[in-house]
Length: 211
Length: 211
Image (cartoon, rainbow over all chains, first blue to last red; front, side, top):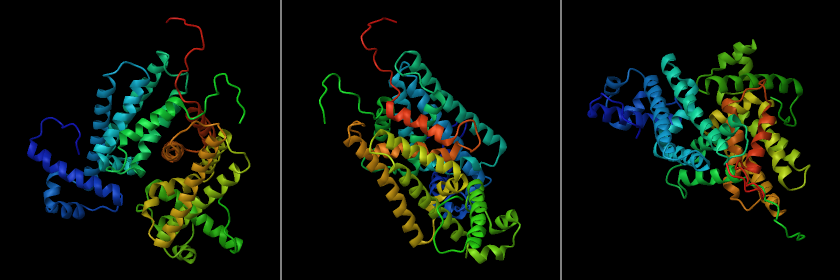
């Protein structure tokens, strides 16, 4: 799980808990949250169950931490990338490409998050996750509005356009697998072209050729 | 669950099993497959557990039947609608609108299907489901190809365009709820316009106005 490190933790703990989170994410994504057990995680890592409980009080705590790290990492990565560019079409393209690249780099964590974001248990943690998710959606909407303001996008419904874009990107967790013919960013590039330029054949400029 | 009736079953059994499927779908969609129990289904319907086992041998059998009915109903409904129109842009629009309308009418079954299609247990049933899903994707790709052939869509990557469209429509199961300000078909109409026409501001025809 290559998300930004939280400050103040020694790196050995960071590494051990990172391994637990990574293995747990893979299991949650493959078997679902309910189907995965702490025993399976400890078996896969070749450690004992108490070693896991040393870092996390419960399976739910592992799950919540995965979701928070994913959302946090996604927001930080993508917002850093897009602020390198001025407002406009290219900034929207950058948003889509960095989102897809993050999904690929953190594939299992991302897939685990989308499997069951709604199932988060701890009320405070869930509230924190919702705040980050809303901030992320707001970032995308601002990018769309800014691109409209500079005249590069036409006057579209910002909320629905944002949803359309996130739907395309997030649904990748369902069918995309790293290591295939195309990278996630390449697919996002095609998605960007589809939604930016549309798929309608423009009318031919002047020639009135039949058939 | 308003899917096409399978032939050869008496209608009283159809009604009882329909109620079970409907209640089970809502539960699976809300709590996930593992979180839902036969007891919860029987409690919600005010019937006994044996009454449920009279129709379905297991929770998994209920789940598999929901997925099959959803896929079957989706394919039948949408393919009937689109074949009423000639190939072209409008046929693609019809595909998106009927898919969304089916999602809204069969909301919980649809949401349950998307929660855990991968988790189907019975190998034969899963193979049947995969066949229907593939046939549905093939239908969409044929619509896109046909619209390109008649010159109404530009030369796009058919597979990725099909995926983009299904992503937008399927992700609705995650955030859309029936009874809101917009119907699912209205949202699909906006999605169609976005992907058909694109969101880029076209260059102004001739006036070279600055700022």
